[in-house]
Length: 329
Ligand SMILES: Nc1nc2c(c(=O)[nH]1)N[C@H]1C(S)=C(S)[C@@H](COP(=O)(O)O)O[C@H]1N2
Ligand SMILES: [Mo]
Image (cartoon, rainbow, N blue to C red; front, top):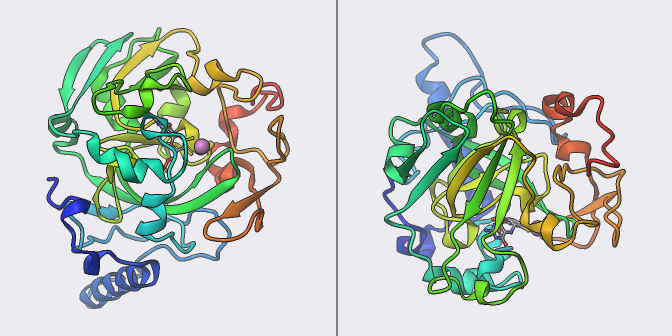
């Protein structure tokens, strides 16, 4: 299933945003032409640039993909996507250093195959899963998301992934499972950054079970039609598009179903600055900066207003009804 790795792709094949968008348009046009004899229907995800995901009329296969079975997600946005260059050279991955350019330089030290994910805790099927078995039979969807970060930058990234809910269902959580906790690999031999105690290693994150089961929450295994670059969290990472980027834990090796709310690495390191929920919320300031506006890369600081739940309020606001989001930040 995993065919091309980014390192194997000649740079001439690395597509910039315009070519990529045109290719998608071309794919849709071709699919529409092929379907012309049948029922009329506009393929792809139309809609104004509001940041609200528009439902795609029909999945379209992406022939340029390194994955055989990628379809267009109903949750894709039509906002312009960032280039592969931007997405893979401006990263946060503290296991490879704390500045934004270090992961692109050092994450090649990470061995992503073979890879397994241990599932434990409150579930009927605790197991060690090989990555191939997690992906087997899984329909991958291309979902273009804005990935957000507390530093107030954002990007639009064409992730390839599948709903975390699908995998959770296979683990059969018990009624005691109220949260799910995730852990990144912690191996100083491959990750020079973990020798520095900037965070409490291993990197850990958590979601409430209903957040984890929401169809917008994905396990991403690729972007731009290819397997994930290591610096973006290969071979498997979380993407939760209505939360700040740091909830998107990379290179997951362990998942645990638990009854009590777990603490995340960022909460442990700075509890007054980072809460468990970490929903994108323009009306609640970070203690050291305003979150009212964000910087869509590339560009200058605060070039656009930040949207509640990162523009996904219609889909996720009900998860938090009745909660005080100033307290539960
Ligand atoms: N294991 C691990 N996961 C991590 C991080 C990290 O340092 N280590 N950084 C987080 C932060 S702060 C952000 S903003 C996103 C960045 O994801 P990207 O580099 O793919 O854009 O990854 C998140 N996941
Ligand atoms: Mo971040």
